Image 1: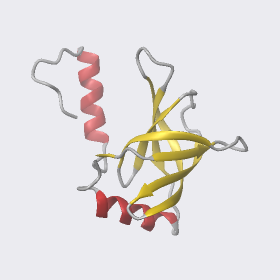
Image 2 (image 1 turned 90 degrees about the vertical axis):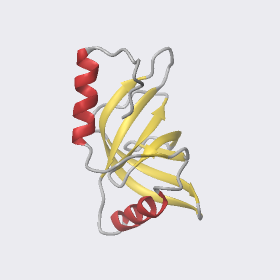
Image 3 (image 1 turned 45 degrees about the vertical axis):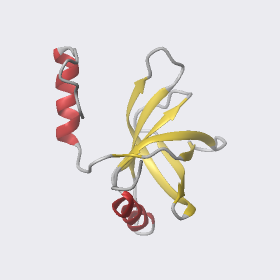
Image 4 (image 1 turned 45 degrees about the horizontal axis):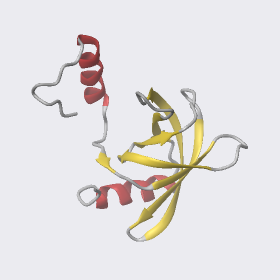
Length: 130
């Protein structure tokens, strides 16, 4: 997390930022791609990602998603063009100010099939993802 030298943040916000930095197991990288997500039997909903890591991603969504919700994901990537299926759990939700959107942090719940594919994609693209 980068804070501009003249940023004004409350003590509480600063503490949260420090906790978030210290709790990250994986570095996140900007990642602006289409991601479909689905909860339960609801239809697939489209979203745009904000960043990605080997451990999860951030989505910008229009409807609130409760913490600990399990979501099925279809991550559309362009290099090479394909869809990476994944599953994740909502670990944080933040309302976007002056908007009807939410940023949602999703931790990947990986299995022996999806885990290596996701890790391989992110680790091989982390310096080229813009």
